[in-house]
Amino acid sequence: MKMSGNEPTPISSLPLPPMQYINQYTDENVRRQRAPRHPPPIHDTYTMFGNTYHTDDNIIRPLESQGIRRLYPQHFDRRRELKKLNHSLLVNFLDLLDILVC
Image 1 (cartoon, rainbow, N blue to C red):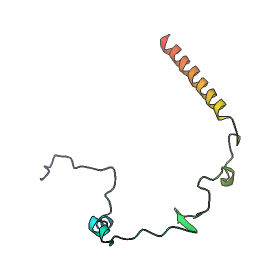
Image 2: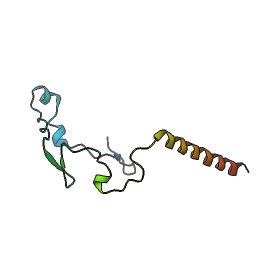
Image 3: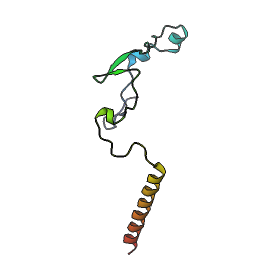
Image 4: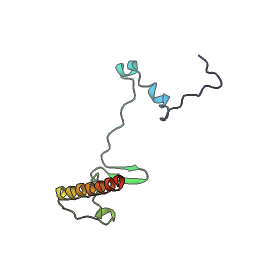
């Protein structure tokens, strides 16, 4: 089926899959164990985006170890903070309603 000159061509927001890999992972190749093997797991260090990482590093490092100043205390009452936030949100919403009604 040919597309006429004034019909828009379909555009995908995702890039096309790499055909050289897709063609190697057919059902027949997987069944015959001809598909490429998975890469070996990383045991020591690896480089990602130009930074070297160790596999035993914490995934989420504390702010202080990254040289970033913490803006809130290390241990605080989350329930109290959420109640304060909820109260502030409710007061601001009621102020907005008061402005809209009057």
